[in-house]
Image (cartoon, rainbow, N blue to C red; front, side):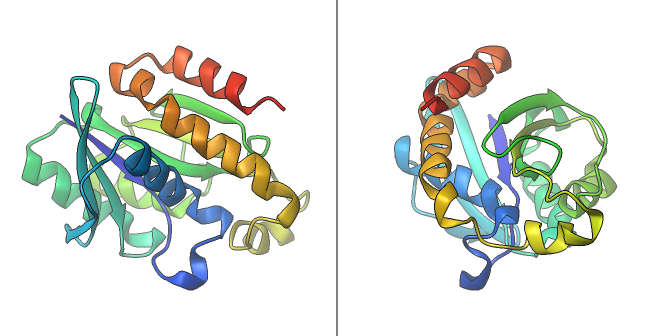
Amino acid sequence: MQLWVGLGNPGDKYQAHRHNVGFMALDEIAEVHRFSPWKKQFRGLTAEGRIGSDKIVLLKPQTYMNESGGSVRAALDFYKLDLGDVTVFHDELDLTPMKVKVRMGGGLAGHNGLRSIDKHLGKDFRRVRIGIGHPGSKDRVTGHVLGNYHKSEIDALGRMLAAIGAEADRLAEGDDARFMNDVALRCQD
């Protein structure tokens, strides 16, 4: 069993924010792979399903980004999983918009959701880093991260999310390199 966590903030007003791309990725995976309906659990929303032979629990913490770790810890303890069974989908300023990279562990890069998870669990979990790009100057970061995607980005965002959903089986198998490659190929114009 694996626990896949999408980071974001709950509520309609945050729905289209770049910071919520982790939620968006999980919504796409749940739809493409016909997961169960979302239910309230672990101070979040969960959906269950299978991708290939792997049982996957999707978790969207509803605690706001800064407190995501408590929700993830509750789910991890309930299912008696190890940190190596956790994959976190999150926005990444230091990646080109719509670029997707997977890595195990690493720094927090000022991301409050990752900081909260690190506080409750440690650093050694798999991350699906979804590029949102840097706005250019530090004083514009908050507005960029907490801003909606621009109209000009919507088509590329849709292609990228569809690619993540379509290639999720590679991620479930642990073939991170093939997942990244196949997502990139699907995202080309």
